[in-house]
Image 1: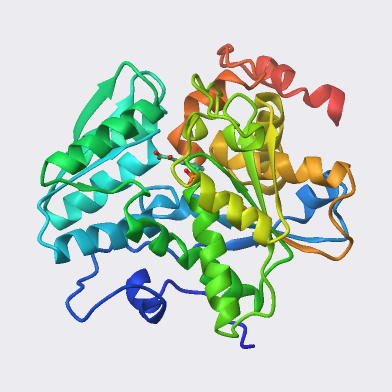
Image 2 (image 1 turned 60 degrees about the vertical axis):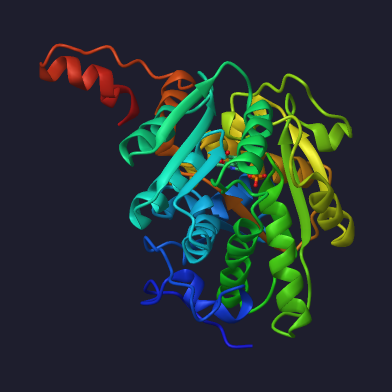
Length: 365
Ligand code: AN7
């Protein structure tokens, strides 16, 4: 199998590059912002820290997509297909990233975009994006699950295309991340660790791996390992969570739309679904930044928090190749970074002695 290293972004839009695996027609015109082809970086220091020094741990940096999250992979296809079908307006419910992506691709396409958000529970960067890209932002006094129910009703009764992952093109587009992983590694990894909210992405990854396995481009399907936040873990608990809570607001979801498909992906691949606490998420979030120089958002760190748990109970064999999907960029939620760091940011007098004191140079050198 040829190993393709993506040194440069493809000159073609993502969905055209992989068009033979996607539901494109001759009439589909790609609405693209240069999405996809994200780096898959090795994380040896992190691997060592969690006791996996004999494994090949890679991080898929989905925060480097144009709007800072993996949602762009699905949105480029969903918006392109909406335009192909003659739609002039789209709507989504969102914990933040879907809205940022929908707003950007709608702006690019020149169509109207409505986003419905749970008030007070969306990271500031994401809200700023949705506003600046010119979407109509509506906040509800309710959670994501309620917002999605409302959006389903709007989609049924008005000529507005839903671009949540219940839109079939979203998951089709999101599959492209698996193609990149296989292209980059030359084969599938042994484990794929991924945060789970509405459960679309884990379902999309399984579809992608399965498709390329069936077409002979890879000899195996990785164990799909999904991680929910403890306060928002309906699939783990096998029960709808009425009032989901977690500081990882991106995955603050109590009744995932792709529940069944995610369950299927986990069971069919010999994977697992587990939950991680907010403290474990924050620990992984800090480790990623300090050991690997990767600033992801808290929800994304759930993949690494979950892997650390698996490692601790010996569930990862020596020599395994593991890909953790870091779904969103840490810059979307700087509040979280500042709020949970123990750093003293009080200004000091601009004098050398004070500075040397603060730097601790006398003690450490
Ligand atoms: C950073 O934006 O649901 O399991 O409305 O933003 O496919 O839902 C976001 C989800 C993981 C979970 N990481 O993916 C939304 C939304 C980040 C996310 C997830 C989300 P799914």
